Amino acid sequence: MVANYATTLVANYATTLVANYATTLVANYATTLVANYATTFYPPTMISATFTIFTILSELRRGRPASQLWRIFYHFGESLTPRIPFWLHLCVQASLLDSSCPPRPARHFNTWLTLPPEVQTHELLEAWLRTPKNAQDRCARRAFIRRLEQREPLMDRDQRDLPGLQALGLCQPGSLTAWGEIILLNKPAPTQPQPAAWHIEGDQLFIPFPPDWSLLWELEAFLRPASPGRYLLRKPDLRHAAAHGLCAAPFDKLTPSRCPSGRATPTRQGWENGFMRVLETGLRAPLPQALRAAILSQPVLNVTEGIVLEFSNSEELKRLRRSTVLREHFEHILSPRHVCVSAENAPRLLELLERRGIYAHSLMEAAPKDERSHTRNYFRQPTLPLPKGWTVTKEDLLTEHLRLQQALDILYHAPGGIRPEPRRITPLLMEEHGGQVYVIAYCHTRRAQRTFRLDRIEIPARKEP
Image (cartoon, rainbow, N blue to C red; front, side):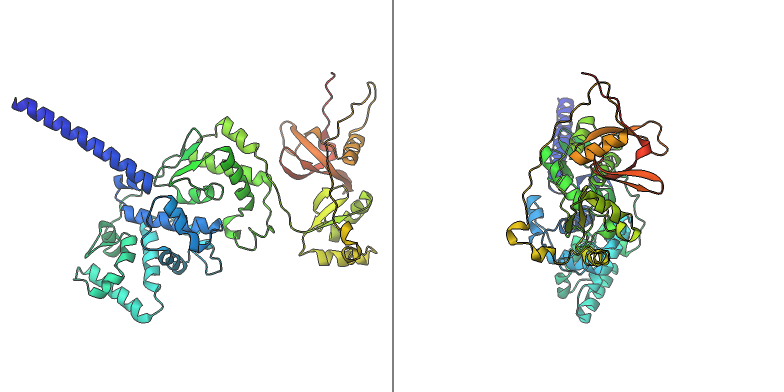
């Protein structure tokens, strides 16, 4: 009887322990996803500090006002302590956030993400000590640190600074935490856990913690988290990723003058390749074919700021592009007769055109208001097949498609390529340069404007009906 009772007691205790542990683990993962850190020696509070700073700067990069940052934590089901102003001032002092209006992530943040956790904490602690504007308050914080290091009783004034150190995971009321002893008493730090591979379940992407923070920063240039560590891959989310990916410049160039204004215009191919590269790096495996196809099929609207110049004759545009001075201004070709010029370069370009007898300064003012804009309807024209027995050169065929603004399929022999690449292009301009004929076209395969050498273009044979 005693043996049976002992066996039953141990079994019930083990079952209850496992059930409680599983429940607690799931609950912590759903709120802050720091439960996995509990299996390591890193304190959840330090992970929470890194996660909080990462989330704040990621939302600022997306353009969310600082006064609305609390909403993302409310969406995650978290009550942020200390409040947002504490973290903003801390990030500015740690050179993670610049002091512009609105604030933007600083270049050092990208480096900070790659540092070991103890080095990150050291930088945050030094920033916390420098944050007060009053010199007396800064001295009081250093005295507070000394009392913690020497295990002396705390003063009443220290209670005001206690929440900041608690947020960094360095102390509890009245004593240092294990992490605080590593940082302040120079105890050896544990081995940093390696990030686990991401995984996809259905239309959701899950990122185990601790993540690769730098790679996660790249991912959040495209996707917004549904909850910490969980990202949706549905069609609306992929469309959202395409829109944000086109606006996301490289990190060291991410300033207000480049992203929102449209001066930096990443190509469609750039966002696709960048998004898929980040996903495959995190998954450590190729993307599923269905997801890859969904990403490549996303429609994107490109908005270009500038002035459109319309030439009555396409030969005039081709003649002007032969000038090396003017050629750099005529790179963004919209059609055989239209070119887009940035508003910044337009005054210089119009001055150069006037020297060649082309006066464009007063055209806008001279045109009546009802003639300044026109609505044009574009429709796809059917391609007329050539009669049997007729032959045509590829230059003539490209010229005809350029005139009709129709797309055609080609095979392009790229330099160093093993086999020709199938492309679908809409010719925009043909010109001769350096003894070679070049075709400037919009490539539907690459979703961007490209330049092709005519001698490397092969027109595939038409299939007989």
